[in-house]
Image (cartoon, rainbow, N blue to C red; front, top):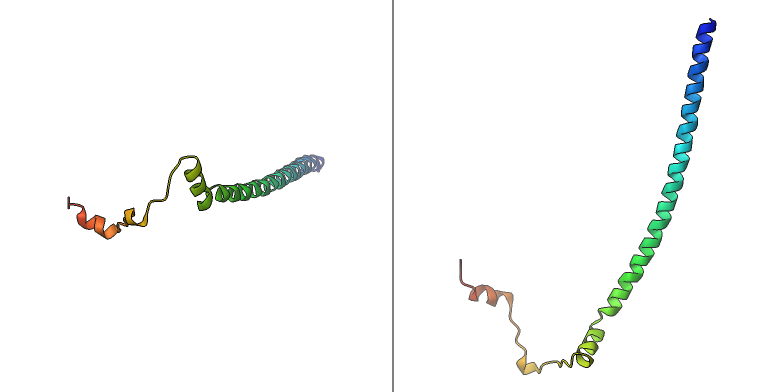
Length: 96
């Protein structure tokens, strides 16, 4: 009987250590998850700000202004503009 009690006692100690270890890991992983979720929120906010900045820099009016002032480009006259449709390109292209 004493032998069985000792075996059960050591099994109880091992199981208890396993429970403590798994609880510690779970808390550590939960804390890490919370930190990563907070970092994700920061990155999403920064991404939104960068998208807004990109849309501001890529506005048609700004690009046209830069092209006119810095590159000395002009909008061509309506007579000089040619619109070519994709169907016309396909018809003009020789079959291979």
